[in-house]
Length: 453
Image 1: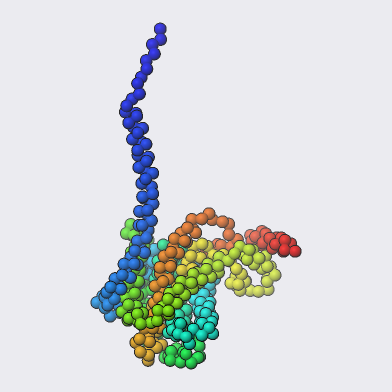
Image 2: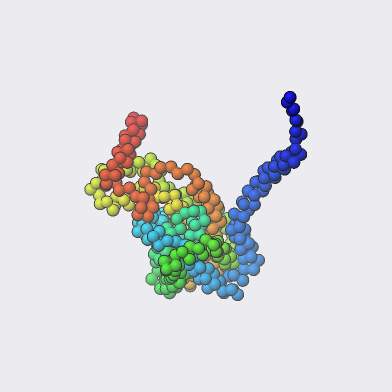
């Protein structure tokens, strides 16, 4: 005899299932909330920039030059020095040494800063002159002079390093380019400005002093670079070499990278404070201000694209260059390495974009004050406004680029024909190990020619 016993469903199991379903529903609703909260938390730097701008507009005297906190020392020296001290603690000496001898990196960044950008702006300025906008006063002459000064300046000192690091780029490459650009740019910029200012009646009253008369300015800029860039960087590197484990722990546990990013907001604060304190921004024609603002946006985007293309040229161009190198065997190898198009690593390309398109007020404002020392205060303020506007706008636009480059790094890594990372990652095109790549490039070149015919 078989007895069948029917066990009723356990209420506890049903309750458990209902509980799991409710938890799943809560998790589904929490995920979007967490995404929104995460997005808002990632925008804290933008909020800080906005707060710094608001404070500068409401109380411009507080953080302007000569104000209660003496920002010319506490911020322009103190904040910048701490940023480079933290950079020295974060970076390995090996990375700095590798980028120090990366001549292609130096030529691209400094060539863009001191050749390509000034030539582009000079072309635009002559188009404006030919269109008669100066005669009709659509654009004020001081704006053209100020933007010409901006185009000749070296890369900025602090913000491009912070942005490169936040985007996941090669901050060691950015630091090397900052040091090289500001050391040489302090001497190149005055000569470029003096040579490029048009010799026309409209610009006679804006003629600056000759570069030979700027000895005091050279000394001040050299002193500032030594105290705010080179010395803190050397101290940070020395401490890292002696106490590497302790330094790595401090960098990760104390969030030193966030501190350097926060200090960047103080630079925005004092820059805006000086712009609002002079009052020149209120008296300059509105058409000139709007022209300056929108032109800066377009030019910064254009310069960034140029930097990216020069750092990572199209694959087809690289293939053709590899295929044609055997025909240039008589050229010295060092020259071939410099003139042959190559693709840098993505991290180095990000550093090139942030450094090549950026300009600094650290050299720009003292340069304006020295070259136009015999002019009135309002004249110097008018010339300095385009410098301030460009450096302010570049910080906000660079923050947008941080998210773009983060997305760019997350993409699938494609096989690069020629990846350059310091001295490593370079193809030795004269060696046997490169023969296959050369032959493949030549074959692709021949196939492309056959398709055209």
